Image (cartoon, rainbow, N blue to C red; front, side, top):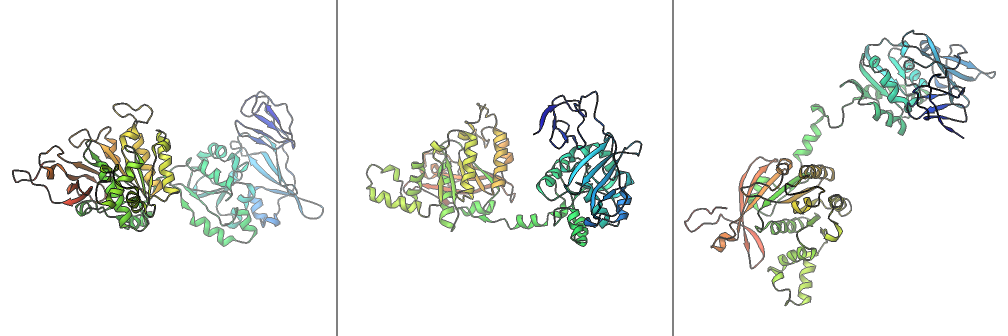
Length: 527
């Protein structure tokens, strides 16, 4: 049973050291592990130093295919048993200032346990005394035996070192010897390919200067295993194939060809209107398209047209509909009116159920529109984003319509008249469309003069901004029911301007593309 809450002689913490049954200790604050016999109690004023122990002779480690020459280079000794098999190995550690052996790490072959002896203070990495301190390459492995194996496979020509206590001390060991390691042009991490080894890689990979680090990906667990299996050629190939590490988000321009091809071949789905397609060249995933207008101009009706077109013009497109300004019944009724060719909401009290049901079945055929019920939202922005993720992953929605942004924003904690938090929300939405690979149509209110209500971050982060403009109070009903579709931002193709005009037919409840309306003076109408 482990004995906890002992004082650590290395860092001085009075309760961080744990003593284990086999005699080794581990400090949970400074991460120091000592494998020698416990001589405690340990106090910060009297750090424990056991007697230096190193016996045996320099010789090969045959079961690991490590030659005498390699052991001689590193000063490793072996102790044979009566039957000729090795009982233990001793790995020397040298003081960085005096270059003298001040500590050893003994490996018991039978149990595969390790035991430290001597004073580890100010010792370098294993094998550091064999290195020049500068040059083209230095390789770091997790353990001493792996360092010997790498050196063996390169005929002892390259500088190779190892961590002191494996993956668990990678961060500390490299930090303590970073100045030494930085003397090399290339620092090669050759850690184990297991979970702990790769966790250690992630902890230390950002410690080095740019363009120095290379990370080896092995086809087997570690370098020692590859030497034992005679996979020297495979190891050498993996070593030289190691790619230079670049922090997340940093990409060399020479590695962008596939991205260019993917961008060129980005699939797009047309809009229902030819003029809009001429400018925007369709709608694509990983894009946010802002649809902006004053209240009562017909933003929701425009969204219904796009939703219906996506379903009727494609074979498998599924659309997620977050119509926050209306009930799911009203949203569904709008699509049913499309099928009926007339506005059904005006005759709900007179139309027979069987006829209403017929249009409902037509509108819902294929079940390719997924709605968000307000009761399932809970007026919480995080829940709303979770519902979008569910629509994508569980329901297969590749297009999402959020109508509208300012209702969603009103739920953000701290939101006020100036819509605090809008930039953060827009940034979250940008990340979401890329993460989920979706196209997001986002409805937004304006404050007049083509100014989006809220923050400039709305338009800055969008891929396209489309204004819907209509003189809804004009005495001419043709002009009053005609909407100008004006593209104000077009990141994909660059073109902007009035794309088309849409006339709302009060009899059919549809918006169709039309020529620019003519006012009483015979000139283009103003919108």
